[in-house]
Image (cartoon, rainbow, N blue to C red):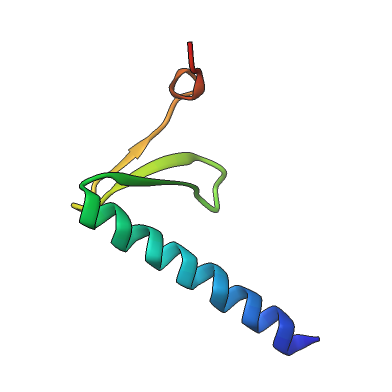
Length: 59
């Protein structure tokens, strides 16, 4: 069971790394939740910007 968990953790990490590479190549950003529960945008420049609830609305 431990190998499955380790494989899953590795796959998640690789997916995040790939998302960062794609964002850099396309001049965009990735969005994720920090361990503290804050939703942030991370730009390819390394700039991290906290998102507010109004950032999630699509009106």
